[in-house]
Length: 628
Image 1 (spheres, rainbow, N blue to C red):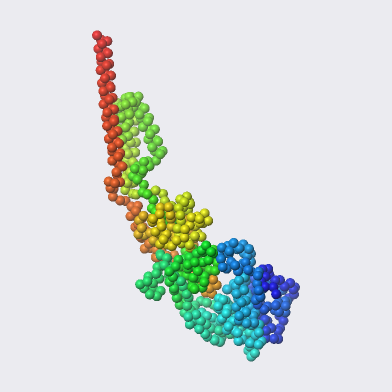
Image 2 (tube, helix red, strand yellow):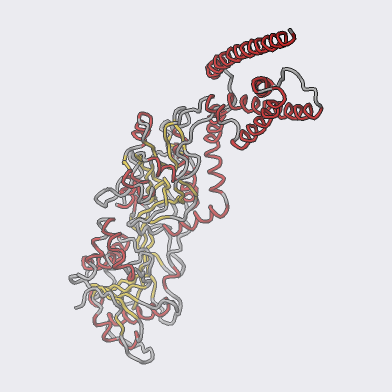
């Protein structure tokens, strides 16, 4: 018998659909099954999957299928999906072999499972789960191959097995000697039978919640899909939902001094609790002392991801980045977030450097050209030494030794006076503002800055896949607290994490810096265990909260305290401060240099004065000699 077929089995019998009437009990169940398949199939998707002991069905009812594509899964040894099964145990193998089976990732909608015992049913359902056609939200029809002998005795055991595999939309078809063909279904959530169905048995399910088995006599004249009458999960009547939670402020606070659900604060907690309370579910939260987790070097899950993937929790109360992952279900993205970098604060720019960089280069070049022209004009009228001294006085003190007598010269000097006064006013005002408002050298603010820095990147494993392949070699896995201490004590290390989480942890830190821009942007969502039956209902309500704007409102309220603290920190760091002598220490050096220059200029003036007196004396002496 062929085991698992990667291609569809086409039964090419060109004829009209004919329903052969069976006389045996088993044939009656098959006829009912085919009628249900016809009523539940879609025009755009009419493919089926038959699993287990299906051979006689395909042979005896070949006219029914016509050109319909059928996928087959047998209970015997399988080998076709061996490579796909390997991907279930390692995320690295999953990524490597994804391209080999991606063309077969086609979830079917209708499943027919025919087995002769419950153990074989478990084996067959496991085989279906290991194929690319598996769909926990699909319609599953379970048939006991020996219903003629057992009747409907296996209804509860078969449907209980389906529940263990999270196949909530399942129907068991059998033949009762008295009532004929019966349909059995179950409901572990609502606690009551749907319309047109009657309750048969009520047993204890999860945490004592009622697990109800109900039945219905099959009506072959009905054209309605039998699955549409059941499993409308709008409320759960106290059904227990298991949650796992870890403290990741400001998204989720855990206050140990309180009890019950009141100890959970933050928008992550508000969202989950609001949805589950609306669904009337019992919330059971387990607090874990672990991290969000990710994929380790062996391709296995760690941390909170592992807890959810292994089924220890139905859903995590913490949200995380929406990334490619297997064995998990990601909810509707409800928030935008990103990664920020924390590093040591850069050195403050000295006042002397501020003074040097105070005026722009074009302005300084223009001033230099104007004063050079002024020097040339004064040199022509008064000589080089007097012209040089006057230009120096004009530049530094906005003064001149003697006003010129020529009107055109006076007009030009007045223009230079006005220019010098304006330049000094701008210079002094900028100087004052730069001295009182601290400035720092550039730090890591963007992804390119992080690339160019060459620093080691520390962070939890949950963010390793978000930094990018170029930065992965520099990524060092560490916990939240270890990363903070490493960055405090190491100048060439940074910590990368969610922006709000980084900002929260640095409220009281003065020597650490958070990037102004997001290094990476992503959307946040919740993670639930794979094939969680009520995931669609949870997701639908989450989407409604997002569209109504309630989640954005809750987030603003949650981070309002954090934003106020951050604003105060920014104001304390970059606001105006008192001007102290240590900020002006460079001015004393300038004073010494200025006094030295003044003394030199004074001696130059004395030398020029003596030189001129000597020249005048010589000229007078020569004149007197000529007169004599």
